[in-house]
Image (cartoon, rainbow, N blue to C red; front, side, top):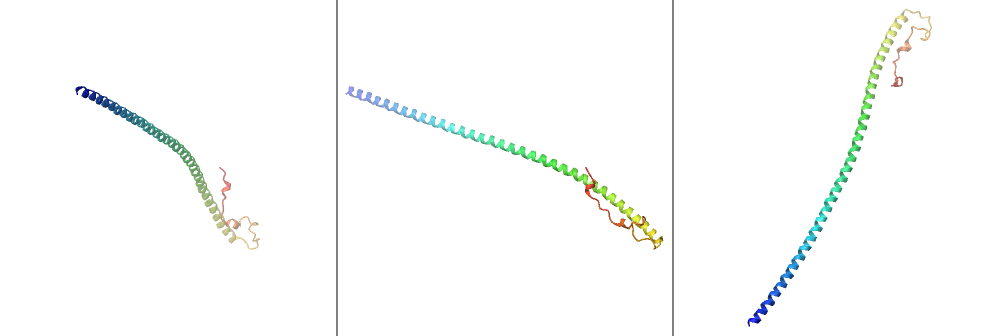
Amino acid sequence: MASSSGTSSGSTSMHNSGSEENFQALMDQRKRKRMISNRESARRSRMRKQKHLDDLTAQVAQLSKENHQLITSIDITTQHYLNVEADNSILRAQVLELSHRLESLNEIINFLTASNDVYEDSSTLNEPSDCFFNPMNLSYLNQSVMASADIFQY
């Protein structure tokens, strides 16, 4: 009986060692699958990160381009504004000068009209009534003086 139990224990240990080898092989295969799966997952993650980085880089380039265009547009608009301000300043100075000239001319007209009234009171009625024949009769100067912007050149 001793020999049969020795044989059976030897076959059980062979059976156990084969089972352990199968179990070890199964565990090694699972580890390799997990390792391959983890590597693939890490590769996909790196690809997603790279795509995200590429998208952000493209967005930075696009925003930089738009920013440059906006700055250029602002610079052009600012230059136009400064030109309009300078033109406006010139026009205000011209308006002021023309207002002074008009005021002076109106004062001259008022003076000549008042002088003409004095002259007409002392003149005789036999003179022709046409104001162009009498140089002192300046009633045609009684009209307001209108100035045109065309008389000024920059």
